[in-house]
Amino acid sequence: MAEFTMDYYANKDKMYVATDCIIFGFDDGNLKLLIFKRRVEPLKGVWSLIGSFVRIDEDIKDAAKRVLKEITGLENVFMEELRAYGAAQRDPGYRCISIGQYALIRINDYDKELVEKHGAHWYDIDEVPELVLDHDKMVEDALLRIRRKARYKPIGFELLPEKFTIPQLQQLYEAIYRTRLDSRNFRKKVLSLNVLIKLDEKDKSSSRRGAFLYKFDHKNYTKLQESGYNFEIM
Image (tube, rainbow, N blue to C red):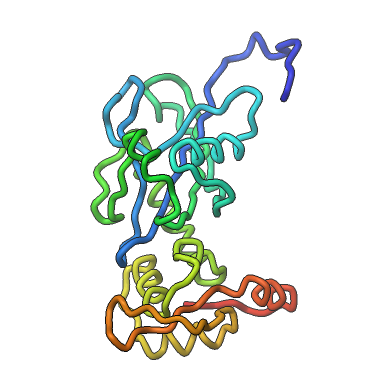
């Protein structure tokens, strides 16, 4: 814990630092966003990303992890800093800079009772209501970052259950890029990457014949990455 015995900058202007979490999930073929109604004035009750002021003894990344755990009960999930949002007039409450952090979680893993307790709700990304302050811009920026990274990094797998089918993986990429993909070409492409482990199990929820389940091969992906392998799924 940091200890500050003297404020060398006492004669300077003060401002707040916050972190806002753009929390994405994937369910039933749709990319979803977790939001809640703002709890503090000004603009109390307006739909908002889930965030917090950064405590004086807390790193910004730790603040984001705290927020995620408090709301979803989850730890050790994919989270990445997006950028700082520091327009002078962005928050009518007071001068405040916010550091956006986006997170990708498996939607069936979070603590549903905890989410309900905090009044948070999942919205399909195309049905998200207007958000407070500059949070709509944060979501837009996060989606652009995900689309750029998902082409060359396997971050999409963070949104899927541990075991998934090729059609489920295709649905995810269609949701991320908002486009239809040719099933045969997509299957051929993802299997050629050598980062999937085919299981003996099948998912028969959508047909009697069923579809084989797969797992992401973290170990082989790491080896391929170290060898300079070009992972390009799109």
